[in-house]
Length: 133
Length: 288
Image (cartoon, rainbow over all chains, first blue to last red; front, side, top):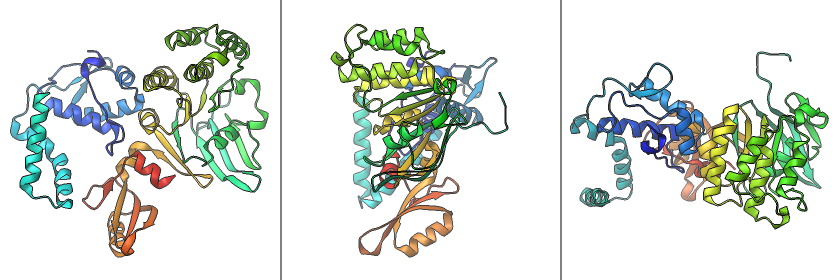
């Protein structure tokens, strides 16, 4: 699979290191069943070129994904999605992956002293806007 | 060649001082660049980044301290050593009467490792006119030519002083790809000074912050993002937080009403509501 198809995205200017952003993206896609067991992911070199990012950052991300059981190394050097990820996780456990992000958003909503209903309305609205795209 | 346990530094500066008249620019600066490191050099305008890079390369004489490149004193480099260095200066120093083709032919004669295929490949990929006088090229084309000149002999130490200032975003991305594909791969040591922080984030694994004539801090960016936290509160609250989390106070800033803001570098990564994460721009504002 080419690195382009994979459509990894990175945000510069973030407080989250780039290697972390990559790990979390793969975690979410595996949870959603978009990436399934045995699927090959781009090589370090391919992804480094596609994203114009230092190859060490990519190998650090892949190393961590391997350690966490998201990916496994096939014979040779290519990495694939690990065996246990045959299908999407149930929504009940997928939603937990949102927790860290929402906890941050909740902390900021409290700092802004927003009523819960108003913050929730905004989240709902943002979700709908995404659906339209 | 002698092999030792610790790798020989590509560049090693010890106690380097330099002043313009009575204005000190470098103050007993220590800096070490190890083989294969890619270091982003950050500092405000006028912090002395260009002076530092020129001094490192031996283009300016320091008044105090020692500088070695690949283990040789910078004022006595042999030809082999000289041929291992590539430099893209901030101000174009190309011979303006030459054409691009003539310029490259001229430089080729100095470098045993000159890679003609690479130079030609980049010239066509980056669309630099070969037969126009350099003076007639646009700023962006001159900058590309200057980069090609610095990459063509496959240097082991590459010094980039604002190499992309006149390139558009597409040109910058092409340049970063070239770095990632063919330069970092060879284990080249790279120092990269630019104000375009997003470019640095992509390719510079380490960041060096220059302040008051010294390298105030150098560390991997990932580590800084994971361990540097901003906290605000009364001095007593901040003391308590710091006691709890342990680490080094990088900076203290007084705020209104007796409150303070501290920048902490924690010994271990930690997240808590009181610990505000920072991005590279925050680090630049606080540390340079």
